[in-house]
Amino acid sequence: MDDKTRNLDASALKGLAHPSRLRLLELLEHHGPATATQLSAQTGENTGVTSYHLRQLARHGFIEDVPERGKGKERWWRARSGGFSLDGDRFRRTPETAEAAEFLLAEIVRQRGAELTRWLEESRTTPRPWIEAGVQSHTALRLTQEELADLVREVAQVLDAHYERVKGRDEETPDTARVIVHFDAFPVGLGGQDRLE
Image 1 (tube, rainbow, N blue to C red):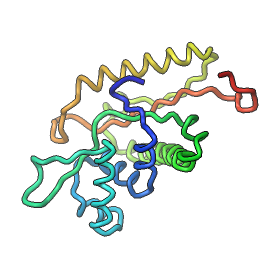
Image 2 (image 1 turned 180 degrees about the vertical axis):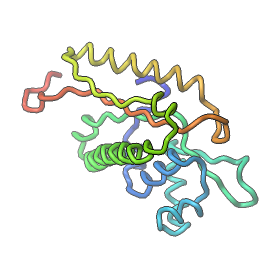
Image 3 (image 1 turned 30 degrees about the vertical axis):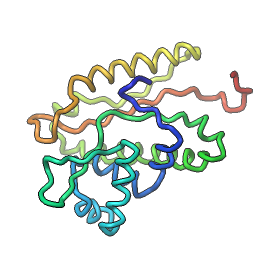
Image 4 (image 1 turned 90 degrees about the horizontal axis):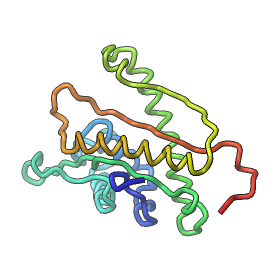
């Protein structure tokens, strides 16, 4: 992927592969900036534990503080724009990262399912123009490895262009909504074959 989509290294993978951190990141991505106190109320964890996990997420570049929102010692956090990609195959084959990679991949699948379920519920009362602007799509193609790589690269370029157009836009921008984009492209039915290196 390109420079807007961060490739996780082993340290960032291990830093993210924790249930509390993934939940905090999810809350910040879905609901916008918040303080450790606000997030601890949503997660049921104490503020000290929440603050520790937020600092770890910031250390690995998943979130950042929002100094203009804080008053006194109050510290606000927001998810960083962009996304990340995970070389799951490499990390799953490396003993030091295998457990973290398996956990993170399973959590990504769980989170996507939860987001789609939440959207199904919310769509009942979402204004029709927003529903018509979105998409739920499933496409099956017969591609070569090179064509699959081209597809992923071209979609990444489109997402990049949109990222550049809206980066820096804050939560108070009128007539905007937080939009979740899922994109998966993977071969099926090759699991039993010898791998081509």
